[in-house]
Length: 435
Image: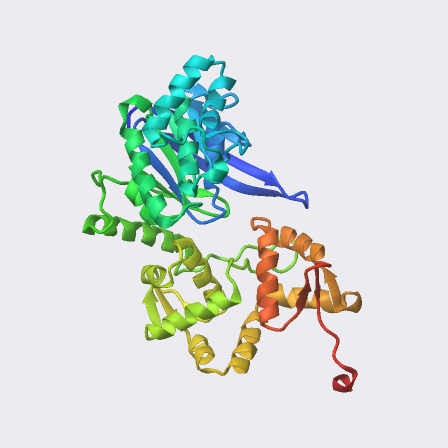
């Protein structure tokens, strides 16, 4: 990285207000310098503040405290040296490819001749020649993302910000686009100095980035910054590539599946509730069955390849199984516990009973069950649970947490959920059974 950074973020704190009035800290004391001619990747689990940090750097949102500088001067408003490629393409459906690319140029006051010349230049650069008059509905996902990249390059940014840019395209298209973006970065005619990208894909950032910022969540902090000195073009199959992938996996695993439990925090409002990882009951059971096929234990990285899910998703399912005491996670291994083995050896009805047994040990479920039992007709409004989730777990997404709570509760036959009325309820026992 060059001695004089393009952008500097120092001691950034960003909070958002929750419906309850409480504040959720998304970024906590984050400092980062963005240098010239680098590809800087922000990597970490969902909710660690990667996208928020990028938006602070671009000037789209302001931090609650801390400072942002561009070329040594405090940033006021939007960062003039930045362009953004969005995850969802963000194209105007009523405009052609050429007009979508030219729109930001016209907004900057360029005349028609200069706009047409610049559009023609970037169309050629990104491989869109012949598609200038096509509309977004006529393009594949990969072509739409090329339009988004061309639109960003047209304004000649110093820093290109890319937020999960390949998540909406198929694997082969994503692989091709990664190589293309590196080519754009190295092309003198783009005048592009730096790329800052948000990703959850470890292999993607090892393939592309010169520096990798691994973030931890709740609240978002920088866990470690790793220099990637592998020469371009990079080979996914090389030993050096895989060695760096394993190193980053180890950092993430240490963050997300620590061997030593954190000391419990004193609850501010009532007994603590356990955050539920975003994983369905069927996914947890599927993980146990995969481990059973591997003699009861497997390296978490091998599970990623075997299950065919991205690393963060496998970690979430593993954390869910660990929360239920069905697996243990020494170092990088995932190992069936005795309860996990007992579960796998059981019949389907016995599995249901065992799952219910494990779920009922969690304070969040015992409290929600008590709330349902106290409610009129044993029907509890989902909003009441959401309010409690906001109060008890202010750093979590309450809607996502409610979805997981309902999924586990229904699978365990603890309660059901009325989607139309958005209520959790317990069916009354038939009178003959009650007597």
